[in-house]
Amino acid sequence: MEGIKLAMTQTKEEHFSRDFLASKAIEDFQAFIGRVKKSVPFYQAKLSEIDPESIRTLDDISRLPFTHKADLREAYPFQMLGVDMSRVQEIHATSGTSGSAVVTAYTAHDLKLWGEAMGRVFRRAGVGPDDVVHNAYGYGLFTGGLGMHYAALEVGAAVVPMSGGYTQRQGKMLKDLGATVICSTPSYAQHIAEAMGEMGISRDDLHLKVGIFGAESWSLEMCRELETQLGITALDVYGLAEIIGPGVASECLIGHEGLHVAEDLFYFEVIDPDTGRPVPDGESGELVLSSLKREATPIMRYRTGDITRILPGPCSCGRTRRIDHIKGRVDDMFTLRGINLFPREIESELLRIEELAPVFQLVLDRNSALDILEVHIEPKDHDIVHEHLIHKVKTHLNRTLGINVAVSVQEPHSIPRSEGKAVRLVDRRNLGR
Ligand SMILES: [Zn+2]
Image (cartoon, rainbow, N blue to C red; front, side):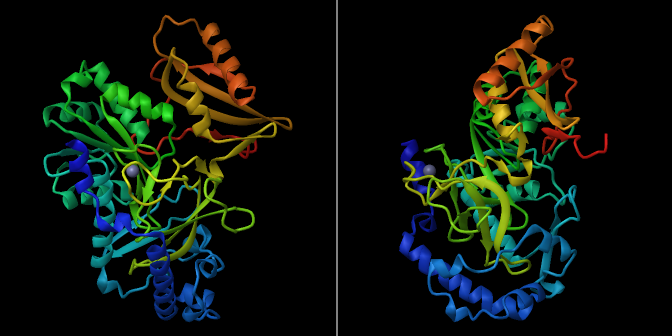
């Protein structure tokens, strides 16, 4: 029965044939080029030589120019705006921690588009009118909070707009208001679970059934950890403000493996980051996304910097194509004595060690010419002998990832907990030390 109920929540757009999606994409690119050449100065210059009618195949699309993050930063604040400001209804911006912020805007049509994409995320997770959604994503310029909020409105669920922070209160509200769904970054959910434990609230006191987590790349081990601690199925959601916010892709409750892309709304490609050419299905590369239907800040072939691959074969739920969980961002990757690593891979290994609390931080430093990685960990309880733990972590990481690291055991609760996106990697190599 549950399967039938879930199947009924699928929309026809999630079952379009590949041929239909391809012809639709070609039409969408033609219309987009015709439109932005008149309305967005950036694309006017970039596409001046391109006739929309010359786009006839997917291969033609794969030869169109990319849009880079630097282009969006240069356009700060409104140079990418494709409509008159009188039509804009909502404006968001990225944090701009590694450069100037990127501003993205929404017309009424764009908010509807976002709602539709987010509604699919919730339906894939089996969330509907009977649910109470505890939304612990930050509300504000960050798109996570309002994106999840619109999803709840779209499917008719009740939403508790907690936002981030007041972590002890999060646990109390989860319990008292009978939330069935929790939304946050995975690291913040972990922090909430820990705070609940300290308050004596167990998973049996809650009514949670599903968690929708995103805005960070997280490992399967973190997923299992959250599922055990909160008594839920933990699903991954992906998106970015430049495209729409969360809602580009998400996991379904039935398959629970890989994220379905709303590909009729957001055209996607996986490319070789060096050559810019598409890679075959199943092979890892950089995700490139287009948000052609967005009116206020439309965007074509955006280099997301996120590493993933197209999962071969259909999902058991029958929906359209899936991408793998994001392995990391191109700029999160670091090299240790010739081995390329993402923080998520180290998270994955650390969470397999029972004596460790599920928090960590990586500090990358340089000693003369050599890069050194120091792994900061916390023991699960006070009685664990530090020397034993150091030895165990060093040997485990050496055996599984082939790396030599320094290990520093921190006092319980001393590694910073995040209320939004966690800082997993602190890079001290370029600070002139
Ligand atoms: Zn599925």
